[in-house]
Length: 108
View 1: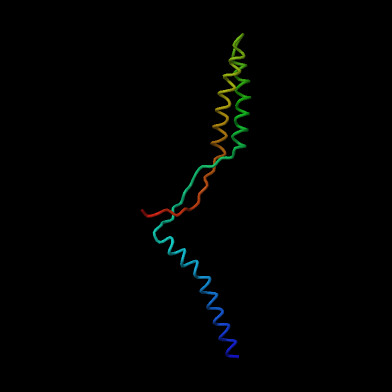
View 2: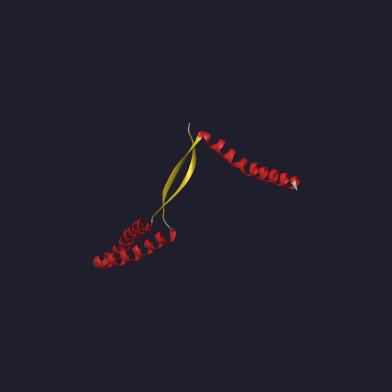
């Protein structure tokens, strides 16, 4: 019976030592580094594409309606271009989310 208890205690201590080794190595590895929170703006490509298309169509219709005579084609093209840029920027702004994560940086 004492041998079984001693074997169990030895096995438990060995398991703890094995489990703690990576933690000690990690603490040693990060001793000359510090953790930094890094954030960036992220927007989905689908929302930007949809905004661009909707803006181009709306701008083209508005440009066509506001131009007169032979300038309707030019008004439609200019309106579509301006609408596309505006729609893209509006969609990008409305769909943007801040994503953050932590990184390790050297103290040097």
